[in-house]
Length: 307
Length: 307
Image (cartoon, each protein chain N blue to C red):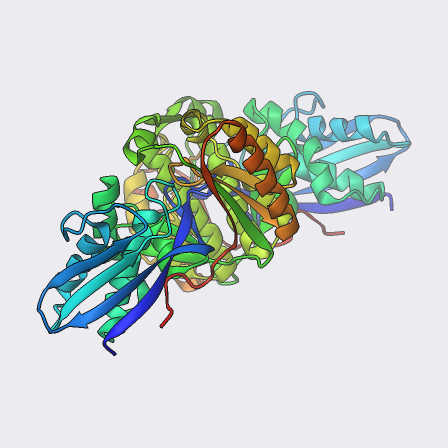
């Protein structure tokens, strides 16, 4: 095998009650990458389409992740990466995680090393770190493993893949405004009232229980955020209208995807997802803001080889 | 049916990562109550053994709970309650919850009203309120329903019974020191650092996942408390030694039961539970403090009719 093409999916981090620990993987939207062996030694990014990203290995998320992997498992051949970005940088649906995960997974497959996906996560995290300034796995884990993921402890890579009820559909709107992850982090309060902590823990426990028991009612009642929504939503135009419109259209829950500005809703079935999408579009287009909108099943496999 | 005898179990609230929302029900220890119809109208507590508690309906937890139930569902006969307390008041294993749950469940059974257990909880809460000053369901719910319970939302009685892996055993030591629930509440900080919130939510999600998947390793890794242990443990003599000794003996986790002073440990199987008990005893007896110690399966049924 001299070349491999992979699909690296977008993802939604936090999922309301799971700030910094929960994530879910999307099926519809994702980057493609072609990774090739080369007779010329070394690691190179040879092509980037879809986004204006640096070709320098040290400055590119995929490059940093790939280099980290190759530092631990050196290749006897050169490696060339072509990146076809479909996920907009700064959209809040795991663009940098997809790049990092795709590069590491792709090289590992190309070299037929057969490391388990979970063991690739630390290298992908090294890539993510240069994008967000901190290593977070709440996009890396779902992009790599698929489904709903819980990062119970990042230091020990204690990452659990939770069940995904089959009828769950995600609707996402990405209003194309600039919102830096570092700003979205800075706006957070460093202390949380004990009462909010109790609600947040009750809700994440309810959500996990609902995922295992396929109880859509319980999933819906649990999809609340007590600790970041109030502050972060200030950075997203018409957030309250978006959320109300999704819930009125029958969403199980609606919240900020990662650090935003994308807003996601979960629903049971595609018909509701389409109604939610239609409401989202109407609100954002009135503002004259450009947007992308996606409707997607939850991708239960994560990053994968296409060819 | 003119008389009924019931067993109302003790319970462990919080269970480390589930402050104010999780609880589990014990099999070994519980109160007994006899509830009788009487030709003399009205509600009376006619006997109390085992604890020095008030006979006045308005001052007794069982009385207040029973009265609350009878205000909503008046009886055409008189009701007499005999209370045989086996759970020490102030032990931190749900003594008042057992009284409240037992009274309400017992009267409902005696009168053959067939309300579901979940619908009896609000009346039991009225009783609990006079004991702790606030209505909490983290002992009421497990004592009523059995097993592991999650109080997702108290206002809407959104209470979920979680699965109970069959090999879980609870070891509990009650060092007989006085510790008021109100003091244990007062010592808590009102604000929690965001980092601790993230750990707590990750742990409760991991615990719930572990209960569903019967993953004892995950249960163990998740049994941590980030928000109350540090403060509350100051009120419990030799807490750190008790915890270390339990973990060294192979406990999956060890923490404060409810607001203390009881300390509980969860283990896989009875052999480890006995070793943990032996360590607990040795530490507390060296202090010259009297204690009770229990080893119990998790009671999956909750309060029940004996005769």
